[in-house]
Image (tube, rainbow, N blue to C red; front, side, top):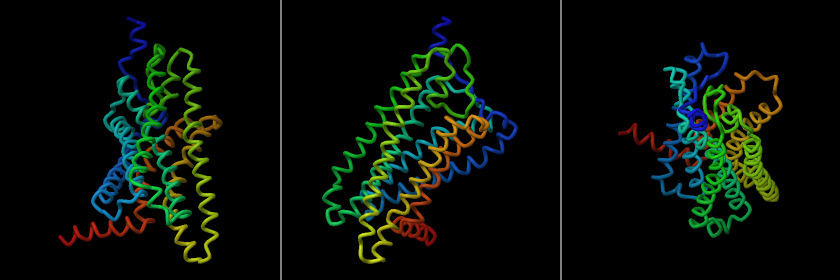
Length: 313
């Protein structure tokens, strides 16, 4: 019975942000606002893409997938954080913890792959404008979307089984606000070297390779842009990539900072790292629809038209 309870713990307890427990109620307020902005913004974006036939283009199909994944990412973490901070619901079941961990990492890998697909879309649009519709056909878009989901699912699913094989006899207290693979594995008293190596290999196989291919795509894009004779054409070509570049920077910059801080920033206080980790899963999903709404003229026009029609009614 003792061994069984170790391998199948009933629940874990979230500490929240260690050292800032008395400020949890106040810290929850900006997170609630950010989460509300993320839900409303991404839902409006999905609605506009669904109802407006002029937005039924490859870039906006990828954007709708990005919005859906952002909703999954923020919903997997922020509501539980708020229930912890505001009503003291610190407990999460073992299966709930595994589910949260899976969707957290799954949505992260999917987001990275979508950004790569969007970079490929911009590469084709700028470098091969006359062949754009023949290269990125609806069938190709569907295959890309399916391959993104299948790749992410098959890579993250082993994390669940790597955690289920571990005994948790020592402690069930998680010094964090959500479950993530290595953080939960470190609670085990068993050898977690496989978890560590797999946790290191997954970002290397997915995120790092995506970043390399995105950089290569934009190298080709810049070469093509600077070969254009007209300055106006160059500015127009660069402006079409502006929103995508902003989203790339918002996604990868804090991710790499967080990884480096955990690996090498041993002098950084734990509460700072945890607070930053929570901002990372909350802010990009809220900012992405705003960036695309402001910097993409098509979505900006449809957004203005939507609300002007509602006001006139």
